Image (cartoon, rainbow, N blue to C red; front, side, top):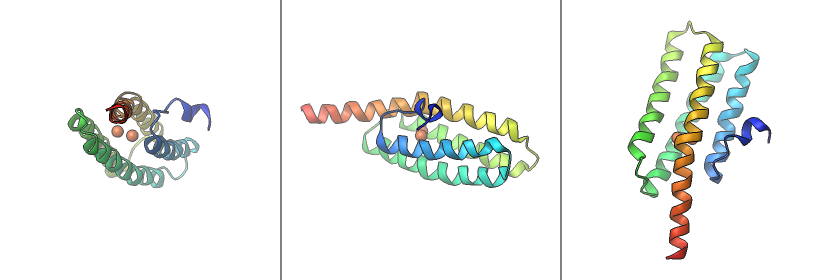
Length: 126
Ligand SMILES: [Fe+2]
Ligand SMILES: [Fe+2]
């Protein structure tokens, strides 16, 4: 695991494992080759990952479920817009994807992971 991955750790096994895959897809954008192909990969994997997180939110009665899910939908719509536009600037797309994911993982996903952890701790002590 390198530093790139470490800053995204939220201490939830499933989320961290899937975030690592997402980050690896983003890293592939750095060499500037097959950008459209990689963006399709990102779209596909994001959809899978978001569905898993949304299951976690539902099963743990996460109070921010709605706003968190909205962010996922917005991101998917944004990637679809990029794909449809065809004339995008690869560097702009890359920096947008990095910024969005970094921010989303560090704020929203981290909050969800903490909620899940505190819930399981409460269940263990009650
Ligand atoms: Fe996530
Ligand atoms: Fe998320």
